[in-house]
Image 1 (cartoon, rainbow, N blue to C red):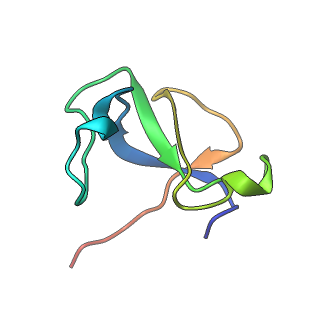
Image 2: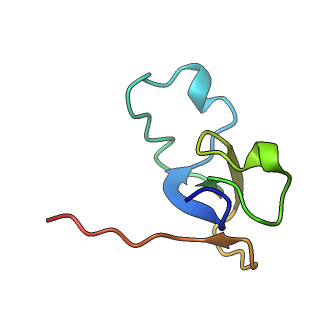
Image 3: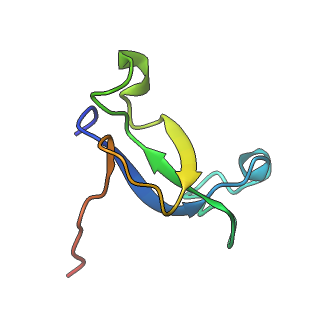
Length: 74
């Protein structure tokens, strides 16, 4: 799925969070100003089109290379 659009995540961005976060499923800080998005986009260079790539931006931003994925828990 990488390379379609970046996907918004529920995590807040923290510049120092990952240096002291749990190694198993880190959730990010509990509050913040920026939200995380992952996965790369057709709009950017290939090395950014990978699941491990993460970036952040204002949560109210709108553009044509960031989206979201719907998921259902049963």
